[in-house]
Length: 289
Ligand SMILES: [Fe+2]
Image 1 (tube, protein in one colour):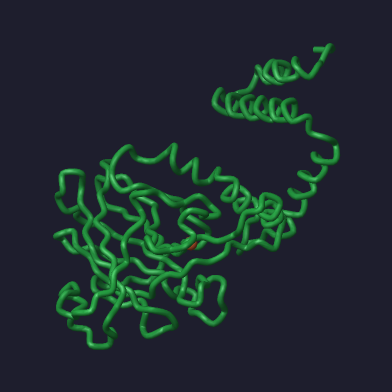
Image 2 (image 1 turned 30 degrees about the horizontal axis):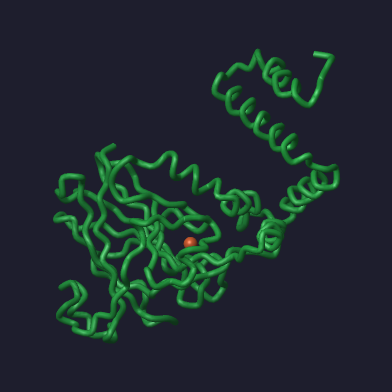
């Protein structure tokens, strides 16, 4: 095509891509180009504005290494990571949420009733509940992968004073679907905002806070794996989560348990758990595979 104009360029892009070996790849890239073209036309994007965007992407390379990925952070802060999670979510069961950057494979086994807190900084929290299928039957063979930040707000990967697997664990759920463990109450924290993704937040007048949360991957034979996270309902950042991870079904009351006898039996016997202790109940439902 030789008579390219602001209105014909999008069709030209699609025509030039007619020999794409993958129909899906063609659909995605032609669609992306079409949305970008519309964006430029509608906003009459200037050379200076385009240059600033290219500069932000160029600077993102300087903030990206094996511990931090500024491109994923851009995706998270734009809501794209969360939207991809939502459009691919199971139609039933406990809602999913974003994975985030701190999950590790091969975390140590924590016995049912075990303790991740071990007297470290912060307020101890007892988490107990059940994992069932949609009919309420125990999901046999469930393994929970758990991870969260420490009472100082940092994940083990961000803090040289923590063991590399601190507050990371794998817990095998009992045959009746029940589980319990003690940990520290997670605290709200800021995503890294010293790079170009943080600059975007400042341009938008947004802040970098995430509400406190407990990350979990729940896997059971015959069920869809569930990647999710749980939030205390009293957190002040629930309505401004920088990465858009909050879902209504994932916000839970965290209450103060005063009576040791009211704790799950596997935890009530542990004298080292100071009372009162924070307590949260997670009753999880898995969708079929
Ligand atoms: Fe997190």
